[in-house]
Image 1 (cartoon, helix red, strand yellow):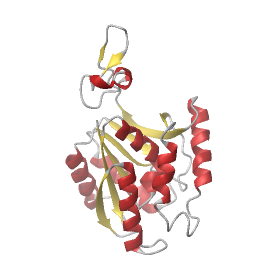
Image 2 (tube, helix red, strand yellow):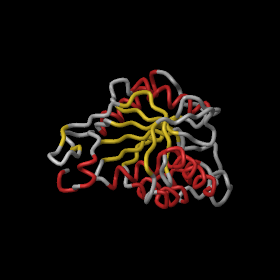
Image 3 (cartoon, helix red, strand yellow):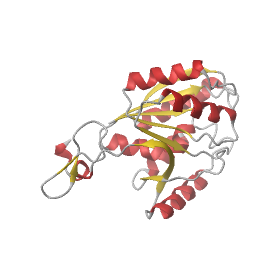
Image 4 (cartoon, helix red, strand yellow):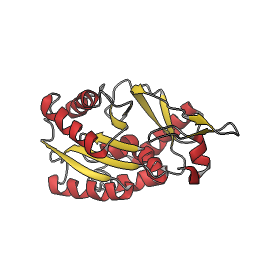
Length: 229
């Protein structure tokens, strides 16, 4: 499976889908990050936040690409759509994560709009929440068990936002994961809204378990039998 996660600023992706990306990497999926701005309007300045995002991407095992837009001025139209389209093609993404369009931050709304337009041919688009999301109502959940510590480690890489300025509250992140887990009948989870989610069950193994038939298939059999991947 090939995955692209789009964020408006450094730390957005880790907040919204860090555990899901770690789960993808654990099963051998390729993961790419597209961060549209350097977050230069936030504390510590652009160079610091860029360095923090590079460290966080390394923790996630993801390839990092920058969009090059100005913090606070991500466009919704052609320029941003083209950047996201290029990233989708480069990764060969068949799963895309991005912001929810209902958000109080204009860059988050623009990132969502651009990604939904650029990903119009992608079969799976999942929209994540951040602290500025409005009326977020997830319908798809990813089990975060075993990956929450890694998500928190990636968030701690954003020193300027976590330990120096308390803009990211890690206790709140843990509490949110527990709440989403409660909703999903799991211990910890990340929740997502979805524009489109095609679930390819592939074939059926002789013991009745589902197995993968191609990239992007949802697979209980492959999870239980790593040699089948």
